[in-house]
Image 1 (cartoon, rainbow, N blue to C red):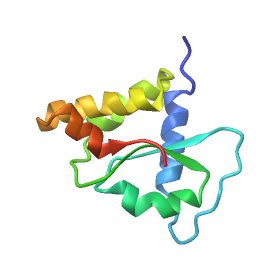
Image 2: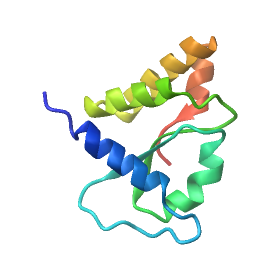
Image 3: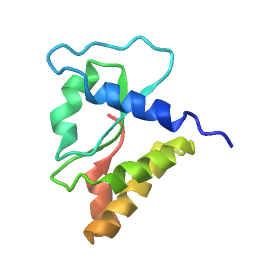
Length: 116
C-alpha cells in the first residue's frame, strides 16, 4: 500500500505551516488537504485562531502542558503516512507519550487531541 504522501512532502508541508506568520497568515490555495501537527504546550489554545486563518487542519495538538518530544511526531507521522484515521493517529501518539512519560493512556489521550 502506497502512503498518501511522501515523507519529504510531509516535512515540507509541516515546515510551511510552522513558519506562517501569526500576524499575516492567509489561506493557502491548494487542492490537497494541509494538516498540522503541533506538539507544544497547550497548542490548541495558542494556535487555534492563527490556524483557522489558514487552510490547515489540526491533525494532532495538545490541551495542556506537556513535553514536546520527537517520538510524538514520529508516531503521528508513521500513522499518517499509512493512511490511518485521526483517532488511530491520536492513539498511536498517546501510546508513545504515555510510555515515555510514564502516564496512563487515558491521561495521554486527554492531552493529545485531533481536529477542531
